[in-house]
Image (cartoon, rainbow, N blue to C red; front, top):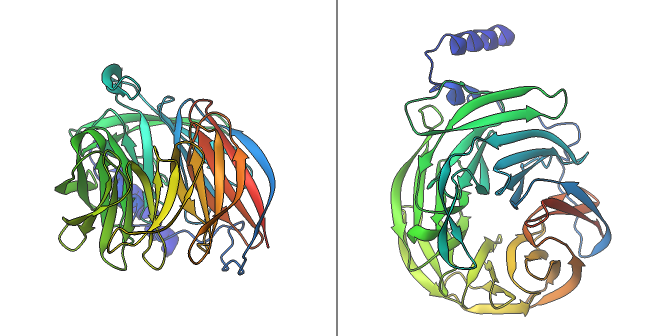
Length: 398
């Protein structure tokens, strides 16, 4: 009987009018997938040390800006800004599975060195977020003024809808099959960067670099275009990193163009206050106790910050231009990509201090990082912007 019902769903999908307005809704009403055989469903044992073992190199595309693992650690997504694409890798084999390639349209970009607008293309992926049990990949497009949802479990309609949309061509590495379809563009603000979600996949936050604001989106996979902006929160200057703390009902936004962290009340989606911190905070994460960890790009420092007062509890120097930071699952280690230094710094987190335990070479200006762990090892996946590669650093847990 379940198989018969599934075939009926597919039949009804095929009979719908052109436009693709229902395809994602049907895709995400499926039951969650079972854990794959190579996914570790048990909790990692306690460990207090990491021993570096090796580094592997994986080819990506030009201008890889960020990387993101799914919740089971079976897939990794690389956002290739200059390549105008998203790569999907099998984490275990390090092999490319699919390339999602955007069709380019002319737009206006930004020269961060000369601080001026330049001719460019709209479809340049920056950061991403997974929602709905890893079935939707939300991607910010640097020069398109918004974000797009990419369905990962099915192919939507290839008929262009009335709503603003972007065309994707999907190439499968095995067999060379090619699909194409449109995904809706949800307008947020100028130069969208980081996307973060609430744990229940009901809301997204998007930091808009040149709009000096944060967009709040309500998600509804039953209704095209699957998200709508329900609020815009002004901030004092350029925003970038976002950390959502569902336990306290607050979100924290690093104001990279200033020296503060904006605190947002999730119950009303309004700014509560600004925490004064050191200058140029870029990325921000939170641990289970609510403490904030922040990278300070210009100062070459990382810090642990009190979320109530903004007081620096402890900090440490890093190599030049720390960008993305990531906590290990036991929250005892912090990984930091150092862009212009071409290094990845690894810190052990003590009760009141950081101890640097490794500083690893990483050519090509490392910028994004995500972490996979199983029972015995940890892998730090680090993407480099200028050479379009991903370095996989393996550590043994002790």
